Amino acid sequence: MPNHLAGETSPYLLQHADNPVDWRPWGDEALSVARATNRPILLSIGYAACHWCHVMAHESFEDPLTAEFMNEHFVCIKVDREERPDLDAVYMQAVQAMTGHGGWPMTVFLTPTAEPFYGGTYFPPADRHGMPSFMRVLKSVSDAYSQRPETIAASVASMRQIYEGSVAGAAAGAGAGVGGEEITAEFLDSAVHAVAANFDVELGGFGGAPKFPPTMLLDFLLRHWARTGDASALEMARNTFVKMAHGGIYDQVGGGFARYSVDARWLVPHFEKMLYDNALLIRFGAQLFEATRDGEARRVTSETVSWLAGEMTAPGGGFYSSLDADSEGVEGKFYVWTTEELDSVLGDDSPIVKMFYGATASGNFEGHNILHMPLSTQDVADRNNIDLDKLLSIVASAKEKLYGYRSRRIWPTRDDKIIAAWNGLALRGVVEAGRALDDDEFRALAMRNAEFLLQHMIVDGRCMRSYSDRSHRLPGFLEDQAAVALGFLAVFEQSLDAKWLNAARLLARVMLDKFWDAEQATFFDTSHDAEQLVSRPRDPTDNATPSGTSLAVDLLLRLANYDGNQNSRAIAARVMNSLADAASRYPSAFGHLLGDAEYAETFACHGDYCDMPSPRALDIALQTSSSTK
Image (cartoon, rainbow, N blue to C red; front, top):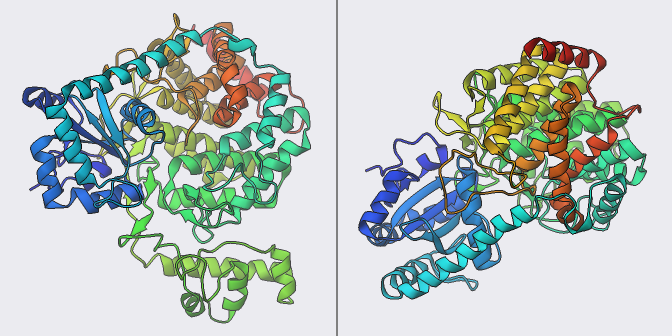
């Protein structure tokens, strides 16, 4: 029999609706049951494309004996972190404080009043590699809760101190120039030097394995080059993008980037494809091409937008969230190849294509091949005694054949909910790709998405979080409000239709009303009228996506350039300066904010590359501003 998740719309929650675990969605009903029965809460947080979430579900949540113990001793709550980033942030802070690390699936044990006292991530079904089994953890937690309440109380008190400390830190950081730092042109020069110290000159990216696309840092570096002419900043940005594009992290057949590479060479991806990664990389690729006319930037950006249009776009124009890493229960099975398959599909062209994509009989991934580009196109042409145009024609034909063959495989599961923030990022990227590549199909794709967001995701200037099964359920967060507004602003700059500028202005006004705390001079990730959790989340650092704070600053700076609103510009400057000390110590965690600062420094730009508003756009902005006052 289905559990309490059967009525949900999240694909991730529905994946667990038939578990023998009596899962409940987060809400008053579940919390009331915990209080009435005085049972601790077992909170499990994950997302649909998460490989290890599937592993733990199969090993533990589908096991009748494990489920029986969970149901008897806990109130079990399952949360989709993509729907509820606020819950994820609050309880991830607890898990990281308790264990020193975090990740998904996240397993957190709470009191009936939702205060965390123990947690972790993935737990195996049997003790291994120093990790306790999930059943051992369940029994230990249950025993402690029933027999050692003083231990639970001490853990809860410790977590309260951590939450209170983070709130106090937010208040203390509200003043400009904490620690003596302030974001200036010299500050940005220093940040570039700090980032460069960690640059992988040979392979691109920063640091070692695993490697995630550092798109926000690349954007910062490109902007720094545009402002200063620093050739090393441009080379770091271009080199990293091309190395990723030639690696297995990029889908050489279908387009689009995987979530990350498990190795330093960008070869072996964790195969899930997330909308937000590709949204950010589309925008960066478009800007890189616009700045340098780099052919690889054009190719990869165009292919990635085409992938987005073909595989990730809903009939109404919204963009879906993700494609799973697994198919048929095997990670990456959909994407890898044997040489026998390549020979069968490609015929006489197979030897050249196998060389081009580095495919060998032994393979590079569990006996199969992840296609990548280990050689330059000119090297492959020379080794086969053909000209470059002929080689490119062979490869283009091979891609079509391989895609057609692969399409007959069992596809990875797609998470078809539509997340507002990620759609806003993607909208902005596709708009800029349409402009940079002068592609009318990309422009049309962007307009369909913008109309969808305006029609289905905005209610009285408030952005909703997600849309699924023809409805939206949850009010949005700071990142949703700011990202969608930035997407609308990009549409205005493309179309010069004032309705998009006005829509962006309305979202910005509501953003300041709902998320800005003037007393503490900070943005919170949840609105003033949101559900009260054990702590109100506020994380200004970039993670997989830009922080809500940095997106809000971006929006205020850009609107100020249209409206001349000095209050918006002052708020943006105050927030940036309040984070200057943290950004100077951890620049890689503030890539988008540093890009905001570069934008502010570059507003007087007159060079070849500058994405400032066009004079015509400014004229329309001023006219619509005066007519709506």
